[in-house]
Amino acid sequence: MSTIELGEIPTADGEQPAPASSVRLDRRLLRQVALALTVVLCAVGLTGSIVPRAHGIRPLWSVPLAEAQGTAISRDGLFVHRTTGTTTTITAYELATGAVRWRRNLDGAIGYVQSADQAGLLLIPVQAQLLTLPSADDGSAFQAEVHEKTVAISAATGAEVWRTTGEPYLITGDTALLTEYTSSAGLARMRLIRLSDQGTIWSHDTPGVRSQVAIPSDGPPENIVTATDTGEIKVFAYDSGALVTAARIPWVTPRPEEGFFNDLFGMSDVVVVNRSQANVFDMSVYRTGTMAELWKASDTDGYASPCGVLICINNTRGVEAYDPATGTRRWQVAGVTNAWSLSRDRVVLSDGTEEGSLRLVDAGTGRPVGEPAEGNLAWDEKQTGSAIVLRGTRSPAGRTAVTRWDLRTGHQWLLGTIAPVAGPPCSVRAPFLACIRGDSYEIVALS
Image 1 (cartoon, rainbow, N blue to C red):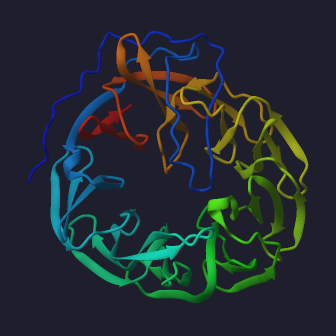
Image 2 (image 1 turned 90 degrees about the vertical axis):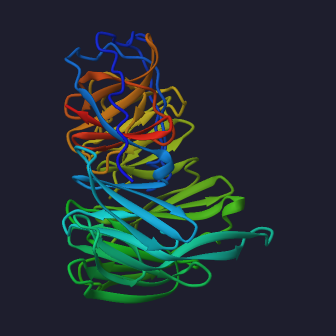
Image 3 (image 1 turned 180 degrees about the horizontal axis):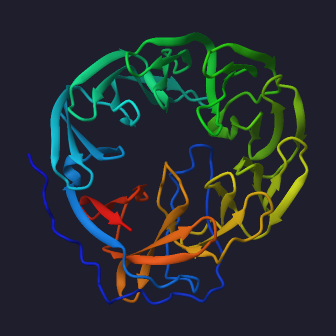
C-alpha cells in the first residue's frame, strides 16, 4: 500500500473570494468543557478587515478516507489507521512529503491514538471493553467503551517500545497519566508514568470516582481533582501524587438524560463546579489548595467555562466574565452565546449560528481586538500567535477561503483558497493544515 498522490488541489490562483458581507459582523463559538473544541463554526465570505497578501497555500498530498478511519498528527508525521475484521493497520507518513515511514498491524480495534512528541512515541489504547450500563432515568441500556491496555510504539520506526495497563488520559512532556476503569465505567485507578520506560511515578486507587480534571498551568498541570457521585472531592499534586486536600461539596445526583449533572473545570488556583438541574444552573468556585468556597452564583441561567484569565458564563444576556477569586464581573458582551479561550490573553466570542462571525476580544477587558472574522476556526492544539479561519466563498462559489488571524493585533490576511472541506474542523500542526476533502484526507502547507 502506498501514498496516493492526488496532485494539487486547484487554488484558483488569481481568483479571490468576493466579500459576502460588509465589515459589520457578529460572531459564534461554543463550549461544553473541555470538550467543546470539537464544535464547528461554518463560514461565509470575507470581512473588510482582511489584509490582501500573496497566497500562502500549497496542497501537498493526501490519502483516501477509506484508509483513514482515524488519524493522529505529530510534529513531523501523520498516522492513519483502519480496522478490518480483527486487525488494525497503522501507516505512518512523513507530514511534509507523504512518504511512507512504516506500516504495522495490531490485533483488534484500537482507541484514540495520541502522539507524545517529546518522547517520540505514539500511545495506542488496545483491548477495548464495551460496557453495558443502565441509564439514569428509565433503566434502558447504553454502552461505554474503555481500554484495558496501552501500547507505546516508536513514531520513527513503528517498533513496539512497551505496553502497560490503563489508557492515556493526559500526556505532558515525558510523562503520561493513565486511567483504569471499573465494570460500571467508574474510575478505578490513576497512574502517572515516565514515557521513557513506563516506570510508575505515583499511583492511586480511586473507588467511587466518576470524574476527574487536571488543573492547567503554563507547564504541566499543577493538580488533578477527582469527584465521586456524592460530591467527595480530592485534590492531588500532579507531579508527586500527594494529597493536597479533600472535602465534600454540594453535588447534584447525576441523571444526565434528564439534565441533572455536574461539571468540573479548573484554572490557576481555583476549581469551578457547574451544577445543572433540568436546565437550572448554579456555580461554585473553590480555592484549589483548601476547597474553601470563594464565591457562588445561583440561577446563572447558563454555563460557566474558562475564559482566558477569567470565568465566563453564557446566558440569555450574552457572555459575562468574572474574576475567579472574587466573583466581580469584569465585562459583558450582549448578543453572543459562546466563549472559547485561545490563550490567557485572547478569547473568541460567537453568536452560535452556523454561519455566524467571530469576535476576538481581550480576555481581561472584553474589548475587541481587530475586526470580526467569519467562519470556522481550525482546531489547533499547539495554539501560538495566530489562528486559522475557514469559510465558504460566494465568488467563486464552492471554495473554502483560508485566512490567518493574528491573535495579538486582530489583523487578518487571506492565504488562499482550497476545494471545499467537509466533516470535522480542519486541524493545524504548524506549518501544515489537515482537512477532510471529499473522499480524501489532505495535507496543505501554510505560510
